[in-house]
Length: 271
Ligand SMILES: NC(=O)C1=CN([C@@H]2O[C@H](COP(=O)(O)OP(=O)(O)OC[C@H]3O[C@@H](n4cnc5c(N)ncnc54)[C@H](O)[C@@H]3O)[C@@H](O)[C@H]2O)C=CC1
Ligand SMILES: O=C([O-])CC(=O)C(=O)O
Image (tube, rainbow, N blue to C red):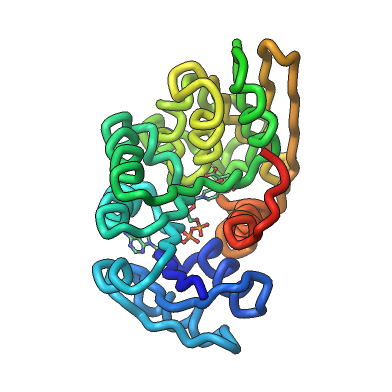
């Protein structure tokens, strides 16, 4: 049975572990790692079937078949190269880290050299399947418009750097417009989806992103528009935010669970 190690025991990590524990994913939950040991202990206590071992990153990488990163972009830089060098397959949630071209090339090269798989779930958006298909021909433009309740953008470097007072925003306000390469640095915990879209489509420089704070919203809304030789594609999701971490949408955790099911299934549906 596939041995899984989860790095990051927050909302997404918790949902993945609970899905394995309930038997929704036919794999063994072997190890957990978090910079906060109390998070590991709380999550372990909530499980019924498995009692995964709390490990350091180095121990975890030596003991599992599949490493799941659901921690932070910083953690991707630290963990994923080591995991690939150790010959492990890796699922990455903090995809924004791959806006760094040097890191991206290094990870893709290591995956190839070590015969490993790197998985990037669709996350909180719909339409990655269509972008994948469309990219088999020319794509001329890709735009992501992300709207979140203002406090769902709290702590973002862009918000801090510009001194934006999110609590005083009274109407829909455009906070950022620019390439995905800049968006994922400006909002590292809000638009990882822009990185996934860039990887699937036309890259981090040509993918355009708009981030809007809207006090009228209670959901995280992501709209994608793609034009190319295939025609035009538009998607819109209205995501319920996680009650534990309002920056993250529930769909993002479900996409990780769904990707795990796909990895384990002999039947593959969708691009
Ligand atoms: N690809 C996508 O569509 C989406 C990606 N994300 C990203 O996925 C990641 C996880 O999201 P959530 O579960 O909502 O976050 P969370 O904040 O609920 O949990 C993250 C956990 O990782 C731990 N952590 C952080 N850095 C670490 C490190 N270097 N080593 C070990 N543990 C570390 C934290 O202590 C925390 O327990 C975040 O980076 C988030 O931005 C979130 C939503 C959508
Ligand atoms: O969960 C979401 O709505 C999107 C998100 O935070 C991200 O892509 O980083």
